[in-house]
Length: 469
Image 1 (tube, rainbow, N blue to C red):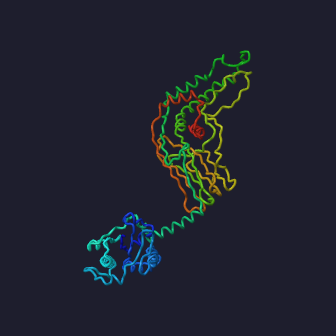
Image 2: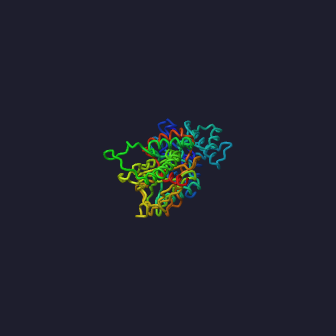
Image 3: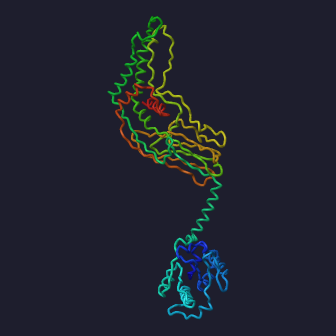
């Protein structure tokens, strides 16, 4: 039988007594807990201290103590029982020198020593978590064990912590009745939080290089081709129309050659556009419990970049077709005057965004669809429904100018029933380097004019450059 005098903190700071693993400390078959008079006084004091956790714990301890018979013990479990120190018996034992029984710690030591000597019990121990009480026990030669930390309850939240918890619960309740917007950015199939652009710049062509490339094109389409290449029935050539010949030699062919020169001059710019374009997808979803009302999605890039609408068609770089020499013949078959642009494409507008407002759940361009490169897009939706398919916004990012610099892409979502906009900021880190030899790259591209471009608005951009020059 092991007799253990307990301190108040066993009731106030520890888990319920029936759940404590006493056998981890005391190997005895039977364990008897004794509650000193000072502990009962403290429990009486604590149980009247409002709605604190200490008061609640004191009330539970009071109910347990009330179950103890006047003379005897209350059995908590098979090996554990609890009893009281007899006031009548212990009061006959003289107070030890240096102890003040008006103090709780001193009264516990006094009761423990008196109980041991009056009942001739040697196997007695103090169980507590109080440094002052342990010091007194050491001074009077009493055995003791410190309550393990694993027996203690988690620290009680402070008043401020409780207020924060209440506010958090209120916020959580409000959020459960509001939209919850999330934004993700994808490059290919991978989600990304940062873009790194390794940009290569092709230098301008020198005059000698430009003339060489123009000659390469003109040699393939000379002003006066070999008549053997002309296709006429029975190889019979009709008479020449002198007026048509003069127009061909003095106007049509020189103008075509001049246009080719401008096209090739700006070919390095096209290669820069094609190689430095970056395709992205923004995914905007509502995972809340209600739709977002009057939603506005704003996408903007810093002044070092532009936004382009991607096309599902393919852009092809192609030189203007040379004028047909056979028109100089009087009886030449009628030929089309159509001259293709420098770029030809089958254009398919981004289908995920409507031009105009159609119905509430669909997104539309807030102002108008931006056919040219701009820095800001705005899209609206009257009722962005929750827990539906996310809105996918496809875009191309293009650096501006020749000296590229770092910047950022920002997507913001506003709504009437969202207190603050939801934002996603994507840093764009730019690493500049010079591309391979510009002349060789242009020569290779001219010799393979049907190479598809990944650009979306490059044709329009380069045509503007030509007109300006």
